Image 1: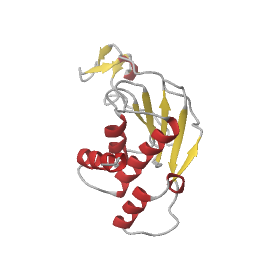
Image 2: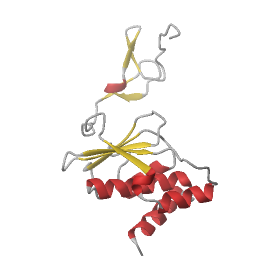
Image 3: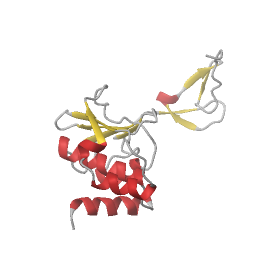
Image 4: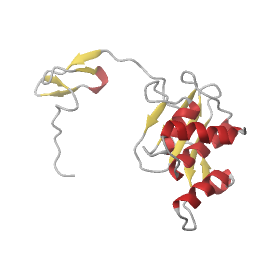
Length: 176
């Protein structure tokens, strides 16, 4: 069985169904493997900064070993179909951005196109516009003085002289 078919089946099994979004993630991983030489990340050897929380991220998790829990999958909410991969071993990075489609396709045709087209036809390859994120850290816990729940110290806010969590914090804004 070819690696591409095996990757697709592994991603579908993890995600739960086939869809064009999952195909985007599978092909983004393939591009990162080809262009950066990345392999499965047992720890934090590979880092992926995803700019969306769509289906393709499931493929990235299962095929690269990048995950929120390990700290090597970082969600940066721009809403773009863009993924920046870094290799900690080489220090290299690559931003992979889905090109806008020039033609309308139904869901099945779009998925087939994404799985079969040349990587250069699907994606733009760019230099990352940010540097390799630092390795994940473990923070000491603090107790929110309102709800009494534990929170990592890097998420504490001060309000009325009390340490509070993000849920209890009442942001002050003036409408802009």
